[in-house]
Amino acid sequence: MKCSAGLFVLIMFFFSQQSFGQCKTYQLNAKRDTINCTDLQNLKQGNWVTRVVNNHGEPGYQEQGFYKDGKKEGAWTTYNLMGDTIAQENYKWGNKNGVCRYYNLMGLVREESWKAIDPLNPYDTVRVYHLDNADKYDLRVVKVESSTVKHGTWTYYDPERGTITKIEEYVIGQLITNKKSDLTTSNLSNNQSNSTDSLSQKNKNKPAEVLQYEKKNSGKKKIKVRDGATGVN
Image 1 (tube, one colour):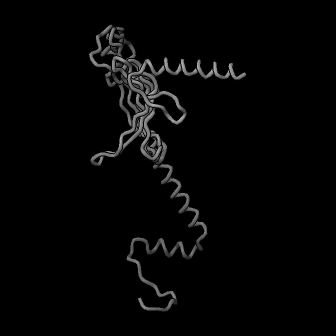
Image 2 (cartoon, rainbow, N blue to C red):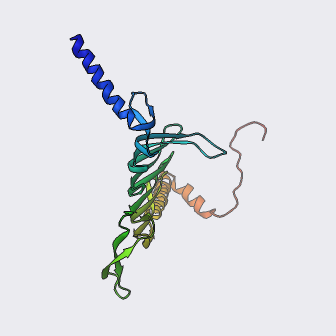
């Protein structure tokens, strides 16, 4: 048993040394996992955690995700220094790709949609719509100059109400539609309607004489009436 245990430790040590040997520099997290590895070509590889402190009024943050050959790849999450999520982003070839979400302390603020461009093949097929008919389009191959472009739906939120305030649609960086949501207006109308309903309910509980008096004196300057209370005004 002792030999087996010793052999197991030796094997684990061998593989850990092999893993560390691929890194010129690295760190170990609380679980003794290798993070923040820089390879022999000084390229960032594997899981990374970066912490930036407050500096000259700029708030600090911590981000974590995966590097491949010195470029961000896959899902990345950014937190403020209190541990609240402020961004969830996706990367490909080191550039934003897919849906990215941004938050403040109230909740979701914005959803963005990006398309990363393959640096080895910077061409893509886009729809070119007809000027005389918005429903018809031709497919055209174009060279994309940017490393990443807005592509898809961008949605803006009111984090306090949880409602959509604006929606934008992009195709390879070109804005196709831009419309403000009517949800905010709808909510405002509902609030006004609720206020009216509440006022109507209050009026139902008032005697007819009081309602008649208020109608007769509406718009007039209010007269202070003594209510029997004592004390210095």
